[in-house]
Image (cartoon, rainbow, N blue to C red; front, side, top):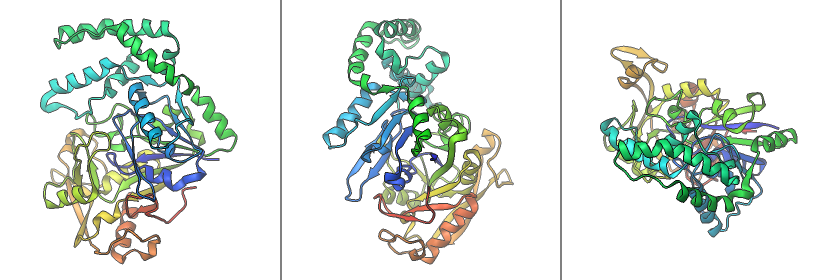
Length: 428
């Protein structure tokens, strides 16, 4: 049975939970393979109940699905337990959760360093959430990170904490004029988390291999999106991990040869949170309209998102670097009521047309959108469930996006609820 990857095709917040929901009870395992609690998925059930998830995979809402936090994720144990407790209070069972023993931990000093460095960067700040994700990944690369499995050995945890804080406290005290962190206090705090998390820590690579061998369906979902990928995004205004499909293999332990489909999710327009280039960004009433009608505020942070028109250059790039087999186009309903709907088909960079992503950061910063304009539609799409029942102009818009992106639009979202979906091609 297949391993399926779901990736964001833009700058995040595209509605990736839509693809997971669409597969429903045909999924046995859902794996989160990168990122931390700086991201989020919003799930809206058919009866209108809304769930905002941050660390937990979106499959946690579906009974019977095993949810896995993979080795590529950085975990704040306090945030994880709070999220689990919040779901339990609403009647959602999280007993089917497993957390990779090799997932790295976010420590108190990571959160402090994240906020301090952002503040000192001033106008050059990246726009992080201040939750310690980048510093945690930095320690992972520097090989001084602390992992979930270290919670199971108090001696190792204390030893690693002492080693890490030997350097961190020097920086905090002598560079930033802050208090030193007490290693014993942090150790005691994290050992309390260990008592609750112990039953969930597992060799998830082995679990997933056994699941695929047994014919189970595994879905791997990334946080953030293609244009925030550390290697393939708009560096340095990116996240600290690899949300693209290649990161799914690394962050889960599932080899690329076992991945059957890669599903990209994009909005019918575009949004971005944080700093960095955004060629189709709108600063007029159209941008405010998309933000207000689309409810464009961050799941985790509540920050207003920057809004813009659909960017087909980005869509083609996402198809290429991820190897997309399917595209899910969400929030088509938000475009209803516009007399014309622009589509960015290429860029103008200092008088030169670019149909593909510019090679350099400088060129992308100077990219100006070249638009194609399609006629809009006025009808309410909320109750439409068949593609042929969409207004003719809405159908043309979807078909043009499909043509420009180079991947078939298999699912169209026409509202926030999981049942407000048009299926053109099955994802399995």
